[in-house]
Length: 462
Image (cartoon, rainbow, N blue to C red; front, side, top):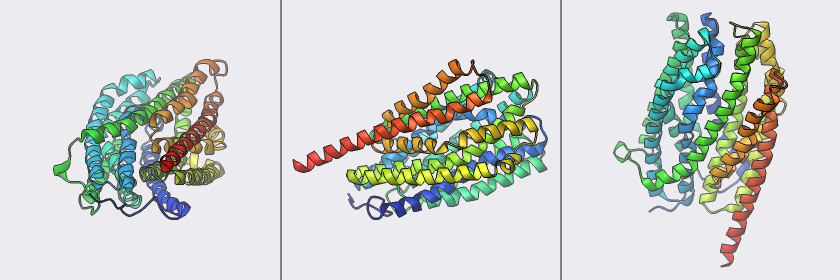
């Protein structure tokens, strides 16, 4: 069994430059994925179907609740594959890769079937009604029909990142992203479709991504090469993926539940102020989509932190993890500050790409101004979570996020919002929860890392 660490080697050499070169393609890849949804919302606005933009915006938390529960296991695949690569174990790496893809396909089918069945009643619970409900249901059902390919795309990308290759997903998603935009325009402007057209375009683009990524991995010369004949579940690898993936999926689901509660509160304000209309829903969706670009940018550092921490931990270089932490926090702060500056500086132009009705614009501007000023604290929260996962403390990460963000937001909406039933009150729940959770995750990360340092030092003296 080969014991040398394959290239690219993430556990040796200058760290800041290596992390930056790894994270930048991740950042661009994530932004391209975000363009799927942005293109959906911008192009669907050209269809002149009332409530189309808002209907897509109301589906986000519900879709994430179902799919992230299952796609969250791709984080487990990333950690397990990266750890075996760091340890120099080719056989276990291959087993983890093939197990991951089977898990991705199966969980994609389960999530898609579940989402297709329950999306309409869940949207009703969120307060959707009338044309917004019908459009949101149509969009969701088509989206969930493509869930197996969406899931597989995420698992393929996780494998590429685990082996230190962040450029290949960028190239593939550039192609599929352009395809998505082209199909959006074709279905909406030529075929005169609406939310059904943009949802179908997203699904077809993910199918293209999954097929290309599979083809590339099937010809890979390294340990992550995929063979159709080897696609089966290796139970040891499966258990390791579940160990990391269950808390990650649970965390994604819990975040989505709290976001669904917030979405229902926003919808309630809209229905009270604009009965039969969707101005507040549209404005909230537009601002949320803009924030999504900032989130995906900072989330690239989270993914980089998971990969670097996992490989370094697998290689037994515990002291180097401290440098991974410092560089991760520094890079994510710089990216968050840049994104906040761009969004706040050009918010009128950016919001205008989505909505032009005065109440919608006002709601979007309010959300952007409250969220973006403290957005770096969300970036810190994400990095702290990624480091804990890379250190094998996925459950700890989930508990911290559950208490600091999810539970806090639920309590806020139940007890604080009724006393101050305004959009400002809803939006302030986000940055406050980010501050609490980022502080807790940083503290836990330091405790776990120092504990591992002591264990390593003790083993060296024995």
